[in-house]
Length: 179
Image 1 (cartoon, rainbow, N blue to C red):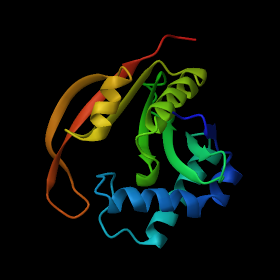
Image 2 (cartoon, one colour; image 1 turned 180 degrees about the vertical axis):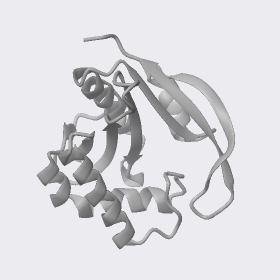
Image 3 (cartoon, rainbow, N blue to C red; image 1 turned 30 degrees about the horizontal axis):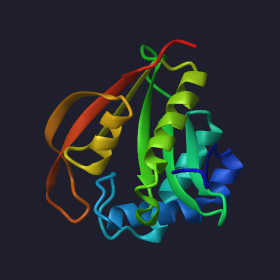
Image 4 (spheres, rainbow, N blue to C red; image 1 turned 45 degrees about the vertical axis):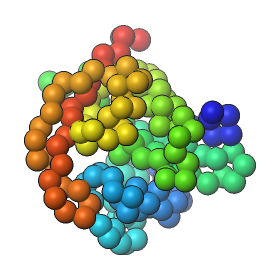
């Protein structure tokens, strides 16, 4: 399914160079109805500012930014972040954030490949507990269950849909073995 896709980390410099492509994925997801912290319509400038902040976090060693890149076109079609920086009493934990796959690239196993790569990167970074949250009842919730994450619970009215209205959020975790 993902034979023409490469999952790889971006260096801080590459993250800066690919802000436009990363923003295109984010904007597509928000306009497609994904509740990923942004309201619709998401302006290019706002998306670019978000990714500049992510690039700064990569440069500071606070997060890892992985992308799914089409081997033929070179286009970035998906992304996920591993947020390494945690409170001092949680050095073993990381958050998975902004797992996004462009609408035109879905149903090809890219989300599952991104999640496996995120787990591997987190484990390599010495993390043994991962957490994430997602919209209850959505495709991402089903994906996380399929790739072995454990549902912790549901928080009603946690966030807003991009076009307004409350949505519930499901919290997941995954235990990794110590490397």
